[in-house]
Structure formats: structure tokens, C-alpha cells
Length: 261
Image (cartoon, rainbow, N blue to C red; front, side, top):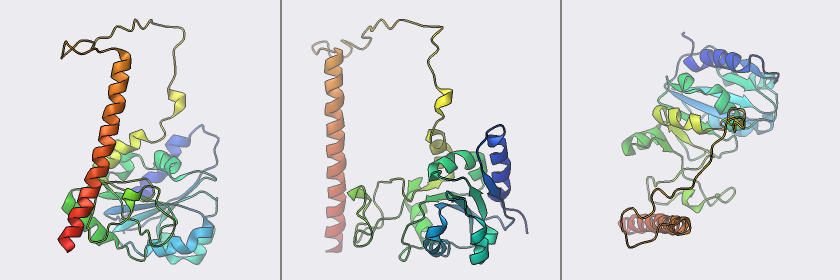
């Protein structure tokens, strides 16, 4: 049985990242067969029942990594047999995206077609991972998420993420249960929690912004191009975008409804 890429690479990536950093991190890599897909969950032991239900929705084609924010890892192996086949990373009081930035470098995720970066508290009674990926492939989705059932649980943060009855998919994703293709993750990873320590103003060398309106008067010579006009145009275009977005979503819902009728 060969070692899973993520279960072996995680350890090396983490050691390289944390050399010289005094932060308590515990990593337990596991040897298992390499999967085609990756499931990542940020978990606490109190939610183990729901995590167990989630894990059982994913087949042997998935490698699994648990990011523990409460420092409790050994109890999982004692209670769940599957826990001995997954990788465990522990750092107290850290978030899903904190873990993802440090342990899911694109080179680590590269062997996987898709990576599920999920919360621990999702109800999965009506979810099946492989049929989900069939739909993702059919529509060519690079970033996706399952629809949210509004009849149970908390209300969705955005109405557009709610499941649309009679529809196979619609276009919007938030960060509670995202699924990324390999290529999409390569882009997204670089936008997660860019370290502020690597951003700064070099005070010893400075310049003067002369504020020359380089685009003023370009195009239509009849129209003014001052900064206030430009800013007003920005807000107008944002409002138009939001309006088109809302109308498009309504039209899609109406088309789906009329198709059913």
C-alpha cells in the first residue's frame, strides 16, 4: 500500500513552514492508499458525531485531513476506526483558512482532481460526493458548493446559496462548503491570508504622486473625466452589476420553474 501524497507531503510542508516559529502544531501523517480527491475539515471533538456522518459520505477515492482547532486528536483514533487512516493536524484556536494557507500548498493538493474545504457542522443526509462531482464535471465548474436546504438548520448568509428546487445547479459560491478543482485551488490559495509581515511602506525611499489624470478626456471629448465623475461612475456601474446579478438569478429561477410546469 503506497503512502497518500497529501499524508506524506503535509508533514514536510508543515515542518518547512514552522521552522523557527514558536507555535504549537502537532501533525500526525498516516499511510493509506492514494485517493483521487481530498476532503479537508476543521474540527473540534465536540462535533465528532457530525464529522463521523460526513466522513462516511465520502468513498475510498477520497483522502481526508482533519484540522483540529481544540488540540484533541488521540480520542478520534480511539473512537473511530477511519480516523487511523486520515491525517491529523492540530493547532489550538485556529480557523479553517489558517490551516489551509499553511498546510494545503498547491503542490500538496496537486495530485487531487478536487479538494473539499468544508466546515464541520454540515448536515449531509441528502449529499453524495461522487454524484456531486459528476454534476461539477458536467457543468465544467472550477469552484462549487452544494445547495443549502433552507427548511432545516440556520438561514443561509446569502439567499442565492439556497437550494433551488428543480434545478441541478446555479452560479454562486460562499466559503462554508466550497469545492475547488486543482487549477482553481492554485489560484485561490495565493489569495488566502496573505501575510501582513510581507507588506510594507519603505519610508527611507519616497516619491510624490503628482495626481495627473492620465485618463481624463480620453474617449469622448465632450464628457468630463475628473476624479469625482470617475468615482460616481464606479458606483453606477457597481449598482448596475448588482441589479443584473439579481435579475439574472430571478430569471434563472423563473425558467427552472416554467420548465417544471
